[in-house]
Image 1 (cartoon, chains in turn purple, brown):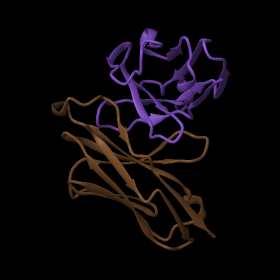
Image 2 (cartoon, chains in turn cyan, brown):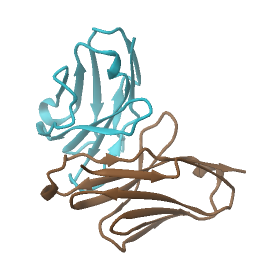
Image 3 (tube, rainbow over the protein chains, first blue to last red):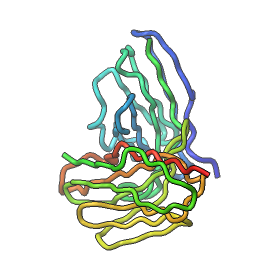
Image 4 (cartoon, each protein chain N blue to C red):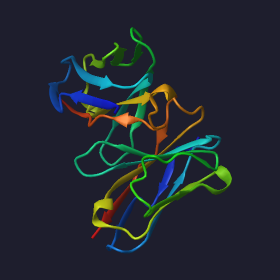
Length: 114
Length: 114
């Protein structure tokens, strides 16, 4: 069974540009999470989808970040326009049973804004 | 606000030298405490979930325990392949009003020397 897959693995963009990250969860997992780790800090929660609905987006840093999950399958996270402080590793995770159960992480997308 | 503190930040052991990693937490109603392993350039890999004080879980050379204030990850007779960063995370219950996502600690970087 395939795990959580993220694309691209690395992205380097200039300040002010737009970047879209993609996450393909484990098949059948209704719950999808986005997290971010910035340099030297712990991994931080961004948002949670249940199927195509945003269940909790309290961790989204500002309105330059837009997450979607059309059809309840894969998800995208768009940053527009990117700022230097958006650099970090963005992780996606999925789980079958939701809160309080194990979530499986992708390998992450390393975003560098220059 | 939910908090997770892991200690030590880094630990270097000889192969076969047993030790414990600590995770202290404060959370408004614990829904679950999670241990993950992370290798360089990869996403966190799920190890254990603990739900209530007194619970213990084992997997190969690893054993996780939970009290009302902290969790320990005991590693017995470690091998070089156990070298990784070990992450602790908590999920708060709904009554605490916390976010859906996990609150992570910064991790313990474990090195096992042959």
